[in-house]
Length: 141
Image: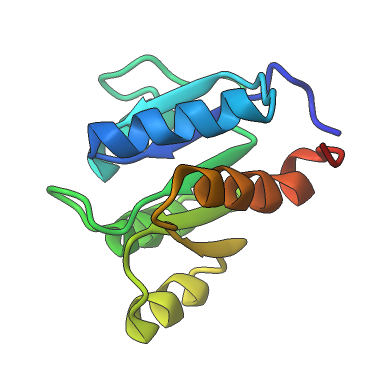
């Protein structure tokens, strides 16, 4: 199990989706700090400490939406995996896109999982808990 102080970086521009992730983490008593970046550019700045407060220690996990302003989630993955200091960070894609091309592109960048956002909160909370369990070493509720 990882340290509860290890953070989770959520890269998501939709405020409702940010609140849904926050509620899902709270529902399953996941106490790790949650950092939120609204764009891929902002996320990279937070990870590198360039023009933003650096996330230190680096997050234990990145939750990444693919449909982002300025830089798509795939472009973010390209830059993340090209950075020797960041390339090994675990990434779970959490997106509304169920397109096979998006899924294939994400897995080319060795994401740890790909979650299509369910429509109901309970389904979403269960899905988030399931995909986080392996990476964060969570027990079953």
